[in-house]
Every structure is written in structure tokens, then in C-alpha cells.
Length: 124
Image 1 (cartoon, rainbow, N blue to C red):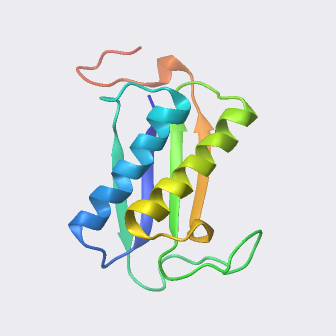
Image 2: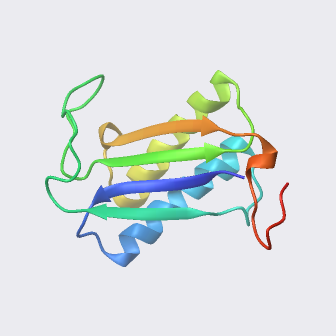
Image 3: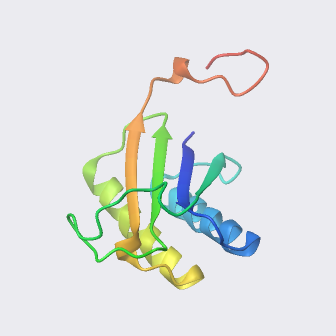
């Protein structure tokens, strides 16, 4: 049950945004073995100057196409699974939308099942 917040600079086409979301979702399905219907993404677009990133810290160079993906997951994954996910993700995004792997940052946090309510005020 991952929930993803995707942040990037404003100006990409709706088709680009859909392909970005699909690439992320497909990588989660493949690597984290989530159900195909488990897709909850919010895309945040920012004006120039609203995303302050170092172009070279622990990677890079980063460009104006930089994307930050913050994933909240319902259960922890082991390090190998997360590393595989990172690799699958950047490969899919590069193939689908030409996004450089150096322009993709991912942060994963996890929560307990009882910290989710998908609808109707019902908890897990």
C-alpha cells in the first residue's frame, strides 16, 4: 500500500506526468510485489526556485528535470529489494520519458497498517 508524492518543476505535459506515474507504479509492482490496483500518487509541480537541490551532492549532475519521489509504504522491505526497486525505477523512467537516472531521488518511509484508512473511516 505505498503512497507516493512526486515533486518536479512545473511545465511537463500531462502525457509526461502520466508516464512518470506509470513508470513508478510499474517499478513498485515489479519490485515490491504490490497489487496492480494499489496506485495512489500525488504530483506536486513547483515553480523555478521552489525546489532547492544541490546539483552534485551524492550523485549528479542534476538538471532542471530533477524529480523527488517520496514513498510512504505499509511494510518495510529489505535493502536488496529497495536497491532493486531504485534500479528498476530509473531504468523505466529513462526508457519511458528520457529522464536521466541522476535526476531521480527517492525517499522511502514505512508505517504500521493501523496508520492507514483507505475510505469510509475504516482502519486497517
